[in-house]
Image (cartoon, rainbow, N blue to C red; front, side):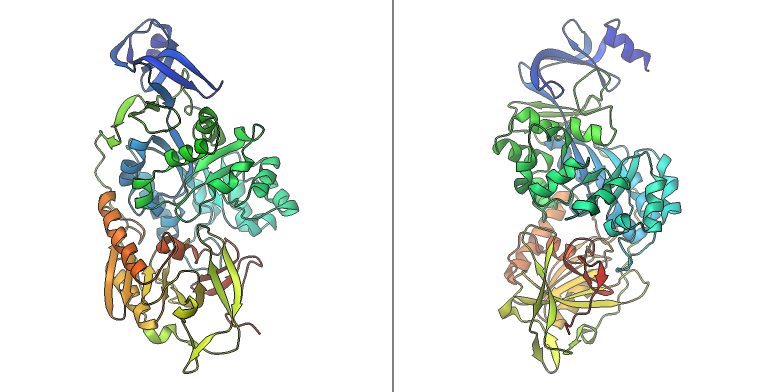
Amino acid sequence: MDTRILAAARGDRPADLIFRRARVVNVFTAEIEAADVAVAAGVVVGLGSGYDAETIVDLDGAYLAPSWIDAHVHIESSMVTPAQFARAVVPRGTTTVVVDPHEIANVHGAQGIDYMLAASADLPLDVQVQIPSCVPATDMGTAGAELPAEALAPFRDRNRVLGLAEVMNYPGVIYGDPGVHAKLRAFSGRPIDGHAPGVRGRALNAYVASGPRTDHECTDPDEATEKLRRGLWVFFREATNARNLDALLPALTDGTAHRICLCTDDRQPADLLDQGGIDAMLRRVVAAGVDPIVALRLATANPAQCHGLTDRGAIAPGRRADLCVLEELGGFRPREVYAAGRRVAVQGRLVTALPDPVPAPAPRVEIDLEPSRLRVPAEGTRLRVIRAVPDQLITGHEVWSPSVREHHAVADPERDLAKLAVAERHGRTGGVGLGFVTGLGLARGALAGTVAHDHHNLIMAGADDVSMVTAARAVAAVGGGLAVAVGHDVLARLPLPVGGLMSEAPIEQVRSEFDALLEAARDLGCSVHDPFMALSFLALEVIPSLKLTDQGLVDVDAFAPVPLWVG
């Protein structure tokens, strides 16, 4: 123990900082305390009167609350590097995030994890890392790397590494896949995040018994309640394309509130800048009638306890001085934000310098694509179609009669039927998976991007093959990113050269360029909130029900490849 902390706690020496006349939000006892709060060496040393300090902040009755912890997030989905992500979330009150860098790890392997650890160091945001468990997610998609248990184990003892990230191969967990269970054993005794969409009953028992202790994939309160009963921490998620918070709130009761956390998972720049992240979720929870202090626990004490971060999540002696000054409690709009006792944001703006960027891995987008490679010969009278579900990661699995032209199945915009393609872009196989999707509303042209969870191959959806290839080539030309095209014309493009996932540009610039992409996509008829986020999850073969990878269609319910044509 730092002797300065003990001396300041006893009152034998001045603290570094005191908040006078604070209304302290106590998440342990669900009450508001009128007290001064003393801080030394970045931690709270005492509450009460009689303390002195070099710096005094008179709060004049404003609330002092612990700042928020995002229980599970992929920074890569913000399309900016960790420093720019911090610029978006810290002024809104988030000072700790528990991240899973499996997006960039699926592109660059261990080098990608090293990059994220280096790029997230020395920020006003404390980035705690769960080591990716699913690189690749399954053997039904081709990622840019493979990280078995022996490649993950050395990360256990790295600074800011907590444990093992979401174990997405839930059939592998349930049925004892040796490789999956080797990873679970390698991180035994450390926090292990789960990922078990729709898993119930005996299968859930087997999953929980194997070691995962959290889940963020619930879509209805009954599923959430069952998982809570079986001992999992349940994370309520409100992402850009997976909006589950409102549906899950009935599972929040007096008996379950101590086992629920909030997380944003995947959130794009416009949502972060306009709506917020955890702060927006807190406001939604309170608007639903939940007591503000109970709501605050979901983003402070609960995630701290869940992840073993016992040095934060509350205002108490020995806890990090990660604090928010609030004019009113239920709005969760910080007037000031402190990270480890240092003021880092004022009135919604970061007021501390960010470190220089660290070198990123070289871009990796290798494709050889011609329109002829996207042709689908008509081999039957019924084909499988993915149905995109608004505001969800799950998809439908439908069977349609094809639209046929010159002996080939083609997109049919009048029926809201777009062609879908996933091209391996890591230079490993060069394979292209082909399928069809409904629910995007695409009337003409095409979308393409190298954000395609979790293998992050190049995914395209379009009304015609030429537009799809044009969009794909536009993305490849800038080392990865997103594009909209019609025919041979590129209408909009967002370069994401860091792993084909992120930009080093300011988040406001990325947001502006992304807004132009969304406008172009909507001009083509796309009706979903974020067609690129929706598109990216059509490739994730661990979320039910039907998905497409570079290897072809995957029936996730059966957890097996299936042919495009039925019968």
